[in-house]
Structure formats: structure tokens, C-alpha cells
Length: 522
Image 1: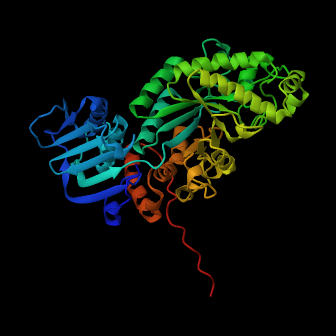
Image 2 (image 1 turned 30 degrees about the vertical axis):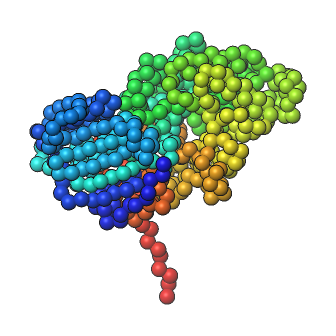
Image 3 (image 1 turned 45 degrees about the vertical axis):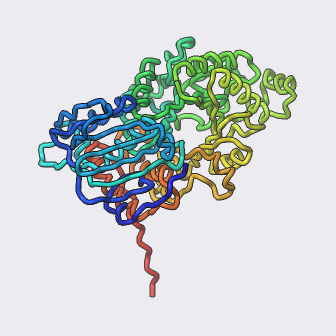
């Protein structure tokens, strides 16, 4: 159910939370964490309670013991009460009700996810020093303003994509990113695991993919920290971290293009036969003409084997198969591909790409998963149940939504955060739903996603500065009702958030100051 939007400007200005909650009512007084504070949770909220204690205890030095909620029980002051109440259908799957009073805090949600997001809001109501890993040496008052909040997201997909191929990001870096996403209520992490620059996921049936496919050719002298791969145990650890932070991980296995790393290991699956080498981005073509041979049955056997392991490893519903920037030059010259076109009654190589994706989708569906791909999967006809990620502007998303397919919007001139020239307030001004869609079509827009391609910025500090504060703008425009967005208030709240980022040792680039108009000469 859609909640009544009733954000009060005065309350919102005094309570600095990102993303802006749906409904805020400021009250008199404060709640103070003290040695007497306990966290009380029902059986479905115990894991969230443990998370909250780990979040608040280090900086405060308080014990914050966890108690189970059992009724009836006499009321005691200074409790943080966490409840999962399935009857709160008004809150949806991710919404929460947060009540902060002088004698205690209560957070309710219809699911543990909702309670978790209520904890994130309480976290932001507390002083930024709550983020410290050790007890604060100054006399910080661990106070949160009294407030009543009813909140739930506008979109179910509030995502971020990390390119792990062009630069390999270690397991701990990914886990750190997941924590940052949770702070601002982002809930989908899309891992771009394979590309021309490296294959980053262990596939037990094809060990060569990581033995040879996770390294750049020696002649390019790349730093060893830019190479590597995730073992399946690494992925399980990342997935456990994601689950605890209520983040869904979507793996991407690129096909049929952006496959140079794979073809270096298995050149027989190309049209030309190789040999190939893995080069750093910028040391070879940005779009590689050598792609997987669509006329070779062994190509499909390979991907079915790979996707079987991927489907077993990742619990999420979606598997991303890429599908973008696949030149058809090799297919036009390949006897096997031309035979496939004739045998299947296809008109051209564009329809051969559609055949490729549809065949993969059928296999993915048989594994109990759904397929998602970049908007080029529209070429030659869209696979029956595919979700489209629209990156070349909004046109692909509009076409898909009009044909009844779900869409994630990530137009590159708004949401590619590795582009330094895209301003935070430009992200804030962008609506994930294109104006060309009617209300029925707009329901197919699941939300929006930022992408970070790691060919130019390859270090943690630079990565942070590309994300912040732009990722806050993404978070707010995918969570907060459109009619409640306020650029002036957002700028003010972002300035408050910078204090929190400094405590978390997150670098940022402040580009949110209003641009002063030049006076015309008189």
C-alpha cells in the first residue's frame, strides 16, 4: 500500500536522514543510550538486534545486552525494541515504523528487512561518532531526537554495480561496500565478474578460467593487486555479509561479447580460433570484435556448465548475462554461425544474438532463476521473461516497459559514477521513471542503479570520492516519494552526512553547493 506522503518541512530540516523518510513528526526531547540500555527483540528480529549491538557498542563502550521479547512483560525504560509484525502490511516488505521517545525506542516492520532499515535510520539520528570502532574519548552524548517516522521505499531496486573485471577488488573491499550501501538503504549489489580484462569467479569445472583468465598478459606489467579472483568460498563469505545487510547480490557472466578473458583460456569457443591475450583496458580495443561463437554447440555447453555453478552459488533470483557491445563481424564471416542462422530460420546476425540470449534464458529459467541483461538484449527480439537494464540512455528501458518487461534504469550519463563530470545534483534531479511511460508501463520500472567501471579509478580513496555524495542522491531518489524530494534540504542533509563519512574514513567530493549565476553586464 502507498503511504500518505506527509513530510513536514520543519521536522525534515531538523532531522538529518538520507534518504528522506516518507513521514516525519518531530517530538520534544531526546532518547539517550546509557549503561542501562537493552535491546529487546522478538524471535524474528534477533539477527537485526545482534547487528544493532555490533553497530552501537564499539563507539559507546556500552554492553547493550539483547533480551528476547516475550509477552506479557512489564514495561522497562531505556529499551530499544525490535519487532517483526507481519500484520503491518501498510509498511510493505522493506518499510518500518520508528518511534523514538525519551524512555525508549520501538522499531517495527512487516519483515526483518524493514526492522533493519529502521535501525539504519536510528543510526543516522545518533551522533556521527557512533561510527567509531573504539570508545570515543570525548564527552559525546549518545542522543537521538524524539521522533515518529513511517517509511518505505518508492522502488524495490536500489542498486549499485561494481566492475570487478577491469580491476579486481578484494573480498574485504566488497564487504566494506555492502556496509556503505546498507547505511543508505541500497539493496542490490550487481557484480560484473567477467569481461575482456579478466574472469574473476572460480568455476570448478573450468579451473583454467582463473588460473589463466584472472591475470593480465605479463608484458603489460600490471600491479598484482589489480589481478585475482574470488574463490567460491570467498563468494559465500560475501553473500553472508550481503544477507546480513539485506542486500541481494546479482552475478554477471558476460556473453556473447566482452569475453576476451574467457576466449584466452578456451580459444576454440571463438569464431576465429585465437590465440588471444588479456590486456588492460586502454591497451587494446574498448569493444573487442572476437566474441563467443554462436554456431558452436560447445559454446552453449560451456555457459550451461558455468551457469549451473553460478545458480547453485548465488541464492538471488536473477542472473545477469551481459549481452552488450557484441559486434557481429566474426559471426558474419563464421561458417558455423551462418549455418546456425539458416538452420534456425533467422534473418540476420541480430536475430542470432536474440537466439543466443533466448536459449540461455531457457536454461537459466530451468535452474529456477530469471535472466537480466543490458539493453542490447532487445536486438532481434527480447527473450520472453527477461529484465532489461537500460544503460544507453532511457530508450531501451522505455521499449522494454512498453512491451511488458521489467526494467532497471541506469543511463550512463546519469548513473555511471566513474564519470567524474556527472554532478550529484544532476543525479538528484533525475527521475528513474521516464516521462514517456504511462502509469501502467511505469510499474515495470523496478528502480535505478549506479555503475562503477574500474578502468580509470582503481584505488579505494578514488572510488569513494566517485561514489560520495552521488550515491546519496541515488539512494534518496529511489527511496523517497518523488513529490517529497527537495534539493535545498538534500544539500543541507548531505553536509551533515559528511561528518559521518569522515568518521567512517570514507573520502568524498563535495559538489553540492549551488551554482551561482553570473550577473549579466549592465
